[in-house]
Length: 292
Ligand SMILES: [Cu+2]
Image: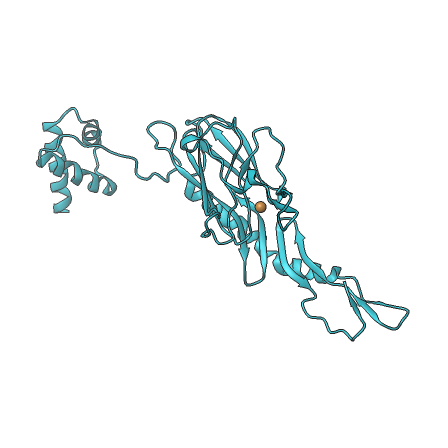
């Protein structure tokens, strides 16, 4: 209590010396010093005692739900794909799929799976095919489309939505020479910008909604938390999806010559969830039987 009184005394002393400080003036008008004010008062008093007559109060956290004035540009992360290697499930999607940011904020797309993907802003151009015919003389008749194999980014990563932009191919490990691990764009104009994965097509698409600085939007931390929750929700459906896949395997058929034809599903998809399995994974057959 004695300590509290001395803090109050110091605040009043500081206020008397510096009546122009709005922070101190408002504290002086309060009849009661609340415990929450004590720490602030101590800081003010120490500042006054040491002759530091400039006291700047910065934003408490860059991660807050703050509005317009004085806020710094922020970086939002979008997770590119997801997976659960234990159950052999891949999620084909961007998390979050729809993201609101302020003008001047940066979106950081981060590889989050071994599956390959792109982040491609078409800006009115048609979706490029993933594979294109290879020039004559090469061993394979097809090759990856160079248009989406390598990054195409605006100068300085400053993007206004008017031009084609693409990340290059994310993964599978993000470390090889031509693999992409992340891609960043800073959005310079309000608007809604759609993008797509050129590997999976429109089944994997996303949207960046760039709003005026004065609109309230979730913080990067909140966005990331929600993205991880959404991924977990999709992956939680994996056991049910495995059951569905197993139920869809056509039953074996008996052939006229006494042999049997068995059927195997190669992979299975339910919405955004892809199962990298054979269904069934094990099959016992006799010589002469067919598996298809
Ligand atoms: Cu994709």
